[in-house]
Amino acid sequence: MTGPPGRRLSGRHLKGLLVALTLLVAFSVAWLRFAAPAPVAANAASELFSAERALVQLRLLLGDEAPHPVGSAANAAVRERIVARLLALGYQPEVQRGFSCGRYGRCSEVQNIVVTLPGGPEAVLLVAHYDSVPAGPGAADDGAAVAALLEVARVLATSPARRNTIVLLIDDGEEVGLLGAELFMAKHPMAKQARVVINLEARGTSGPSMMFETAGPTAGLVRLLAGALDRPITSSLFSAVYEQMPNDTDLTVFRRGGLVGYNVAFLDDARHYHTAQDNLQHLSTASLQHHGDNALGLLDALAAADLEALSRGGDAVWFDVLGFCVVHWPRGWSLPLALLAVALLWGGAAGAARRQPRFWSGLGWILGATLAVIVLVTTVSAVLVGLLAAAGLVHQFGANSAFPLVGVPAVVAATVCCLVVRTRRVQRQSEAARYAGGWSLWGLLTIAVAVLLPEGSYLFIVPALAAGLVALVARSPAGGGWWVWLASLVLLLVMVLLWFPVVLALVAAVGLFGQLAIGAAYGLMATAAIPVLGLVLPPRTVRDGQL
Ligand SMILES: [Zn+2]
Image 1 (cartoon, protein in one colour):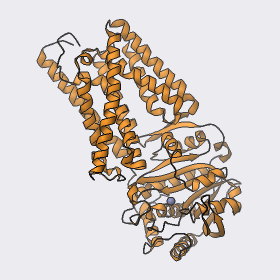
Image 2 (cartoon, rainbow, N blue to C red):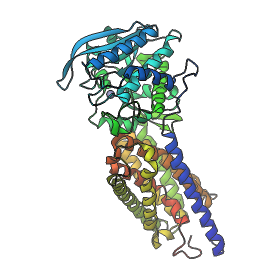
Image 3 (cartoon, helix red, strand yellow):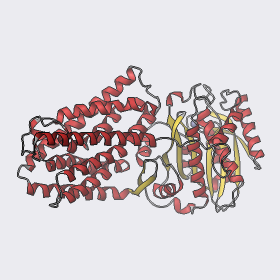
Image 4 (cartoon, helix red, strand yellow):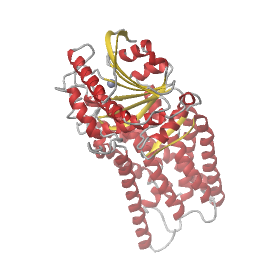
């Protein structure tokens, strides 16, 4: 690129502005979409799930908001109110009583509430637990789920007959060892008919209701979910990460019993979890709405589905795109997709190498710079996130509403990253070398992750495929210059939109204790910035004709 210094400077300013705007829009959109939908009003159409209607029931159920652990008088009072509500809706609820022992040696007398809506020989199970921990009223865990289930029951009471039987199970003794679920699976006659389960949980008091765990082969489950939910927030990565955590829910019992199914929960403000703060005051009505929308959406689809077919087939890799839709592919496709992306990337790089004599040495420098950026941004972000938490500016288990603070490390780290990349050698390289260097490392990572953790491979495959396509097109004589730069900008956008929700999910799931993982996510995101950086930074050492 040559020309009068004045014009080149203004071009750089324009590009810099574009990068800043792209980043601002990408981070903000990803943040705004990683949220529960607005609550539906109490006077909305009766076939809709309304969080305001559900909240009225939840207030009645919780009464004076006394803790109601299994076996307590308050537990009996809550149970009676649930039964009364189901009777008022026209159902004949059954109370299943029994002595049950869990896997951790705790035993107790438990009382499950069961409602059966007859249909075909196979049944879908919708589950929530009504017991709380002794420390608090459990308005979210699992009161919100019980209220959601009752509002779903209200909708079902007036809807037409279905292909499959539906069983609503509001179980007891979950908090002391999944006792109610154990009793249901061991003794209830409907356990034999049940094929698929939807379990509703909470591990915080706000945030989006996410489908974070599955039981059984995932391909069929995810295909059904993709068509059933209005605002899906889910990913095969969440599922893989959750498997590594020591937590258990009722789904564990159903999985052991041979059922397939979904675990759905909201996790934000996890500092309230299992405390007196898990009360009506802190419960987000939007989370309640999302919970209900998810439960009703999945139940509607399952009630009409071939349940036997759902439990066949293999596993999938999946992720939601900003809560708009779910993209999924068979797990076995991950490695071929990764190889295809890398072939495109390296094919493009080879084309550029033929055109530019200093390409390979440039590529080496950019590879080194990319590694440095990943390590640096990871370290700086992790340290900053840790400092923010230590200084009390963000709670370790606060909500994602602390986004501007959680986002600060990204901005600071990106600035550091700019300073690192702004060496003479790196800045002197051609756009093609900067591009190929940045994405070659990415290609290697894509193959490694596709082999080692296919559930998380989408985070690498999607940007690599996009970058590979750009590289392929850029080989043509029309490629290069502004075109490559704009394409790189689009890739930066793709990267942030794909990766930032993972940061938000991490903050919700493991809190800021996951600072190293959060830092690594920022570090990998930053690699997409490298191809555009050289064109944004002031030309410190570049003379005319070098770029
Ligand atoms: Zn719970």
